[in-house]
Image 1 (cartoon, rainbow, N blue to C red):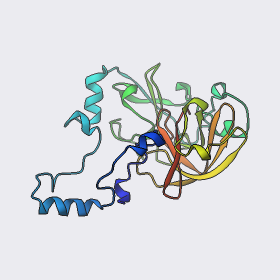
Image 2: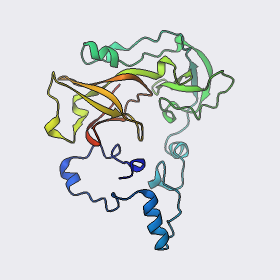
Image 3: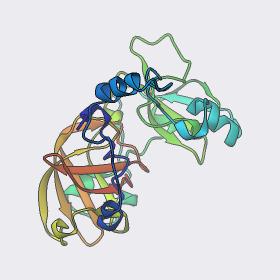
Image 4: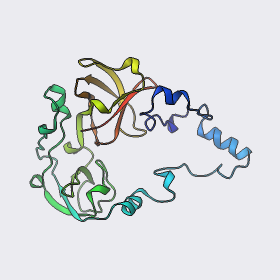
Length: 249
């Protein structure tokens, strides 16, 4: 009931059998109402702050947790100017069609920009991240537009509107496509219009899904920023979550 606490994005890989056994005993209440009841019952958690981040690992911030698990490794931060023409990596495409060309990943290279500073490990950063680079002196804030964990390089660009931060489409490999509503699953060659999100609590935006033997292409009505491989795209019909998939690129 409480749209501010919608957890569907995190549950987007469940199936109907799992959902049939799931119970949400306070799902019909707003969080404010839950707190009021907790106060009346004199529960110690009545005024506790909402949990955020990796709440199951204790009072540890995500960057600190990653540093505990992954050793730091210094590398270069390469800034790419907004006017630079960034090529696409078509070699990674599973097939050639009008949608795959839009979904193709950027082919960032060091010679496209200049060294702006150092980082402590490309594996600590994600696309679209602003905090943590600790590099100032630019007219607009620096955002991570690409990470190369193999060569330990971070590519950055100034401002949220940087072309390297935005894409027109994404691709989900066939084995990573998941339909919660199996009756609505698209066959190869079919397409359908939905609304989608690519991160938690993001406002839904219009998309068109195109299905092929290789996978699913999700075309955006308007370019989206920080499309991140490894994260989920989830698509909805009204308030109902229909399906999801792991973003390949």
